[in-house]
Length: 241
Image (cartoon, rainbow, N blue to C red; front, side, top):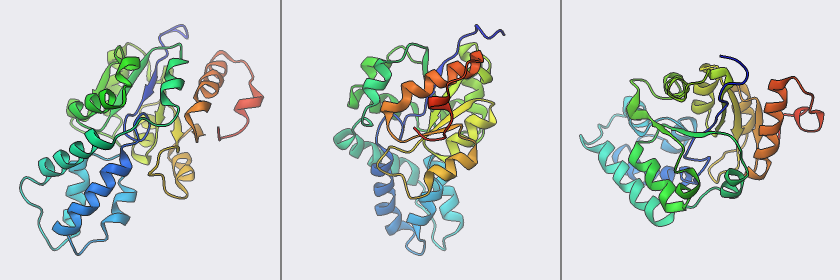
């Protein structure tokens, strides 16, 4: 496929488009504190950012003397989604950034599809992203950090992974997109981001770090210029935007 091929911008959803991770984490901590009281769940969750809820629960249960209820996943997902419906907000500047883009868009998320669609509807971002294909963890055997979901997105969109630019907020997500051969912007502008997270995203393979969505357009332009061989030193000389 030539350099004139489709070059999409792919967003993760949670923590990139919507400020949901802080809500999900608080809900998990409350419930897991009752179910697995012998674990320091907060520390484990910090390192599990971007993983599926099922993978987080499986990992935690392995390190606890206690067993989770058989319906743990459903109960936690329902509790998180109930709070999201009441409290969820879009990431600051996301709507304006999306409106200013002039390239195909897609969404790749480790959340289940109904949560992604509900999150976009709750925040009003669905009006801007109604044409964007949505890819979720249910579509692959191994979700992020495995690159399978991103490879599926590229194949479905009809483009090479090397022609895709991705915005991700987690080490898991950056690892997946980078492993698929895509260029990744590491986003650190959500409410849940811990100290040192930008460095962790860079170490996972992020090409640039974005601290606020107002800088997204400039990074997209820098990426496009880099692909065409043009020099953009005013933007492209540093890792942060």
